[in-house]
Image 1 (cartoon, rainbow, N blue to C red):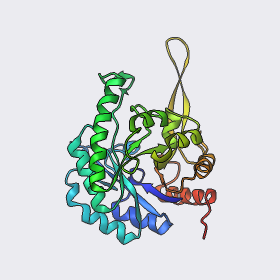
Image 2 (image 1 turned 90 degrees about the vertical axis):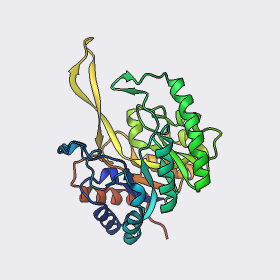
Image 3 (image 1 turned 90 degrees about the horizontal axis):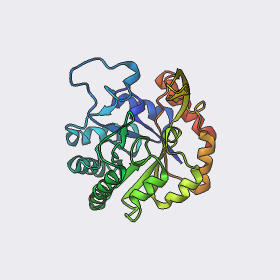
Length: 295
């Protein structure tokens, strides 16, 4: 397996700092986050939101085609490979998806995430039923896969809570019958603590050739101390260090090896128990202890 870091989880570093630091620590690759995340009104982003807004190692989507050379210069200069590109363009945004597929092709990064629609936000349905969203997104994905094939890259569907693909079963239903050379699934350990958990080995076997990429983070559920009107307890999820979340990273990697997966494992640790540089270094040491490097 090869290990990389998704820069959504490195908000304190500029792209150059992220690449240089991760390379010095011994990571194999990097997964660049590309999205417009600067507050339009210039407000200061709270520290707990810095991963997703005002992240210093995020490349802004606006004007991204003009930044391809700089991304390549920084990545190649650090001696890092691309585990993929962390895109945020919705499958329904054909122009945005086309742009991200082209950028991925020009960089030689091979694969890029295409965002799936959210079904419910804060328990409020977006307006369309699940079947309506599914059918529309299947058509959008078919288009994306045809463009990916033309450009020699792969579109990735992530398992993510509150979207129409929270589980391996749901994702397989969406991609089934499409060319696995140009569409695949990102299996995400931490997201599955929140929604969509299925036995991991069974999920890998179910996905088969569509298992294209792996994201690893960890999470846990905590009792808020509040109660509902009926007297029942309320719980909420929070991100946790790799070692102390509810999921077993060790067992997860064992299942990946049992399945025969030998691709990228990308870390996106949103915990803040350790300072960033210590966190990334410790995560790599932990992964290496679980998957020793072989000659």
